[in-house]
Structures are given as C-alpha cells and as structure tokens.
Length: 132
Image 1: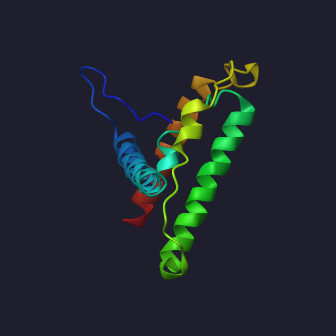
Image 2: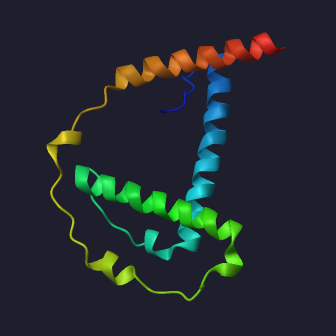
C-alpha cells in the first residue's frame, strides 16, 4: 500500500502523516529482516525467479519461510549447528525464468488500495486521539 504524497500547495492531514509514519516503521523492520536473511543465506541474494508465475511465487515464499525458520533456530541453538558453508548459488544463476502467467495480471485495483489506505489512516488517527 503506497504512502500519501503531498500535493503542491497542500500539506498532509494528521491521519495521513500518521499513516505514513507507521508505514515507514513497518517498511524499516521488513527491510531489516530481509537484509538479515540475505546476509545469512547467500543463496537468497542470487535467487532470480519470475514471481508472476504462481508456481515460482509459491517456491519463493517457501524459500523465504525456510530461511526465516532456520535463522530463528540458529539464534536459539547456534552451538549445535555445523556452520560449514556450501555454495548453492550456481543453481540460482542457471535457473530459467518462465513467461508470465496470466493469473496475476491486472488483479490489483488501485482504487481499492487507495480506499483501504484512507480507512486505515482514519482508524490509526482515531485510535491515537482516543488514547491521548
């Protein structure tokens, strides 16, 4: 969901500024998590898949879930793991990408996204005002 943008001559309303601030916090946490996973699992860096194909999108989700699970297990019991590194990036470089699948084409209605963004902005603002 996109953040609100200032229009020339107009500022953002309180709910819009709050929404942008909360969205930025979520984006920061998300990007930090992705960076940690890519730092630990180098194979995620070289992974090239056409996620418009449903099969490849699902595979990418499984790879990321597995990496997150392994990362959390390593945080708990790092001493018990064999840390010898294996290089699996060759398979990522030779993987073929398929033609886009029509399942995911034009499935997002931007008007619905904007309406949802406005609803969430108002909801966050109302919660903030009620807690003051």
